[in-house]
Image 1 (tube, rainbow, N blue to C red):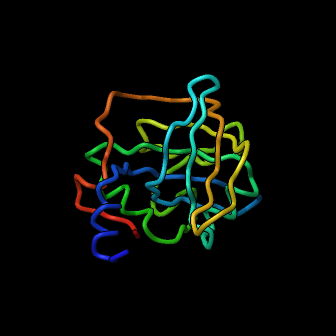
Image 2: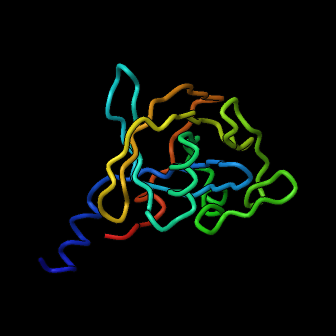
Length: 158
């Protein structure tokens, strides 16, 4: 297959912008991700694909829990902050305040919408293994238009 065509066609898929946060023991991660989908209504399940060689993959795998934040279209700078490695300093991750939920996972104060998830299965193939997660709780502080990769001119891989 020709690489230019491959990239062009794969970029026709629609991708949202999400921030996945997790904590295991004393280690934190918060990363911008784009490979997310709902795969069941009852029970409510989502799947996320996480790059194998990252702290996000490692910590989510170990903790079996994560929080998926859905940034709104006005939170581009907030979202960009999680395109780099996670730093925890004085109660902030990459400069943003958070609190821990009942599963000891970080939730950003800045987030208007987030899902609290529990990993129930995984498919360990490729460079982005797939995790199936049960949604234990959803919080929507206000109605938002979600941030989308295409609308801000971002692409990933392919």
